[in-house]
Length: 112
Length: 112
Image (cartoon, rainbow over all chains, first blue to last red; front, top):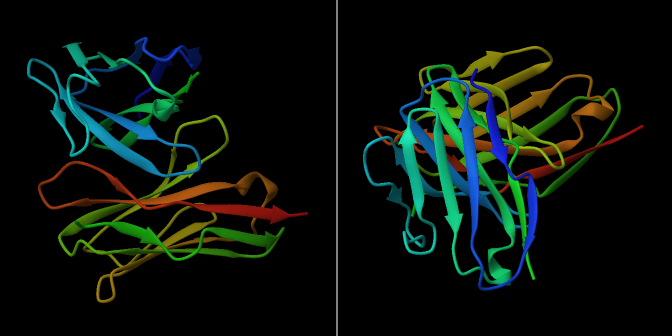
C-alpha cells in the first residue's frame, strides 16, 4: 500500500491566520482525499482532489475556506483559511488505490 | 442523507476474550466495506474489507461479517489483546461513488 507523509504533524495557530498542510505520497495516485476529524468524532470528507482539475467539495465545505492544490500525481496541499477555534481538528489526507484506501497520520490543528 | 452508524460508542472487554463491534449502514447501494483502527495520534489503519458479494471474510484474528438483508456489518476480534485498544470505524463506498463514508466510531478498551 502507499506511504503517505503529511506535514506538519501538529500546529497551534492564531485565529484569522491560514495554515497549509502538505501531503506527499510515495506513488502516483489519481485521487487524493482530504478529511476533517473534529475532536472525539469520526472522519468527514472535505474534498476530492484530482490532478489537473478543480477539487470537488462536499456539502458544507467551500473552496474559499479550504483551497486545495494538486500540482502532480504524488502531492497535494490543503489550506485552512482565516482560521477560527471551530477549525481545531485533525486534518487527514487519503489516497485510494487498487488495494484499498490509505491515510496519512494527520495534522492536529489547534486554533487559539 | 445516507449514513453509516455504529450501535455502541464504547466497548470494554477482558484481555483474551473475543470482541464484536457492530455497524449499521443505510445505503443499500454500498458495495464495499472497510474496517479501520485508529490509535491515538495516528491516522486510520486498514484492518479488513469485504465486498457486497460476500458475507464473511477472515483475516488474522479478525473476521468481518456482512448481512445485506438487514444492512449490518460486524468486526470480530479473537483473543483480544491490549494492543487492540483503539477507536474502530466502519466505512462504506456506494456504487460508482468512490468516496468513503465513515461511521461514528467506537472505542475498544481492553482490560488486563
